[in-house]
Length: 478
Image (tube, rainbow, N blue to C red):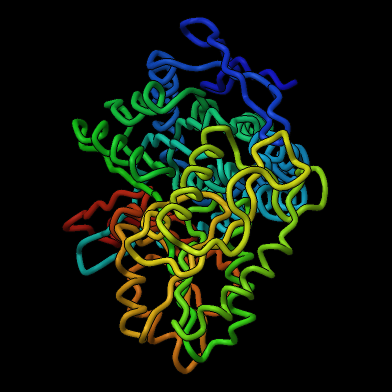
């Protein structure tokens, strides 16, 4: 069993200021206690923020070369522990071992390598006439991250923050904190200067609120639900700090009339089931031409029934969802879909056969879904696909955009057609025909899916302030 009863503050492991309040971390595969963490308080956050503020005085003035060298050291340290981090992710949130190794843990190194590449070319200064435009680190950053892609969501904040010269305080999800604790060890072993990276465990209403409202935190970056994001923004408002958010989604997947239906539908089902449906950008609303509803439903049924579910230590495509709370919510929404008249094509309520313990959900597909149904409106955050029919392309675009969210969207069709539809979808990232991952592509949403962008060079801008120096004499400065 893993015991992490200290916090990482100012370059060392310290006891909670108010004494240890242990919190059990549950293994979702068998519902056993996998370990414990200590829950922090506002006093712990204050200690961490003050350490970050002290460290910023020096780290904020480091050169590009010095930060490049540090990132290289972190990369080397992370690579040594990648197997341990992947195993922790499997244990804390149920990702199948293959997914934890090939994607979850690998994304951490990818963000570090991307940040290193961007740093080496990033223009921090630009002369325009007699005015010098300078990009400077914003200062102390507070990071509040979720459990679904734990290291990915941490490193797409930490990597650009390190690269731009910021210091930070991280609150990982208390539901899945193990991989974050290992990351603190990685940072320590890499020689990250004391106070640059700090970690305090705890819940949102206590530690999250303390980070968001702290007057010495210059920026708070939050990834999670829209509901929680609103609370973060309200807590941050009194100190007028920068608020960066990556929130919920209900992403449309528009299958055009000229798409290869079996390929498009099968790929769409697999994308929803990935990570047990626990991805904010999952294409959970599939829009198909109404005359093709029956055909699409049968293809989706076959794909869903081929999705194996089992212990994350094995080779199953899907493991459990993260917690009893998530399991209960997903079950209630599946039942709501049945009650509201959608056609249950595959899956349904209850656990898959043979899995009586653990938070396992059946890969579920609904057809004949209408846009007013709950399963078409609410983010389910589980392996549940809703298929909606459309009469014409204009109607498809209208329904695709008829959501308070705008994180991602998907289009399947001929390349002389699909890009024009992609341009009309109101989302921060639009994927055409299953395009692969681009680590330089900005990631973030429109509307209630958040503000700002992560990944690649766009992420750097979130951590920088712009200073204009007027009357700058280049020759005198040299």
